[in-house]
Length: 123
Image (cartoon, rainbow, N blue to C red; front, side):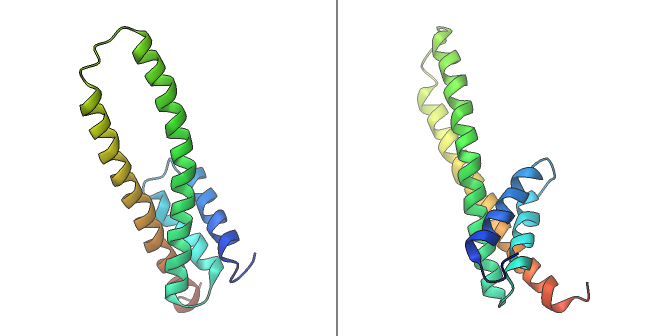
């Protein structure tokens, strides 16, 4: 792989996060892979891990948007009351912020750990 090729390593980490999404804390694993492949300093691992989390978050947002589109169409077509619109919007906004913090934050931690593992552990 490309050591110091930040975008490629971040993309590999994001794909790993998505493929391993059934595993708890999968952004840490994806970030660790990206940080390990990146090399460099700890801050390089942190940066590539965070970028991996952003790429994974964007991919997750596309799938989430499609889900909301289909569920929203079914909801509006069913004649259900629309009084829950403001609460639903607030819920989705809070869920988006928490999801972003979870994905990007844990990926950054994983990037740091992957860089640490590359240089400090005898693996």
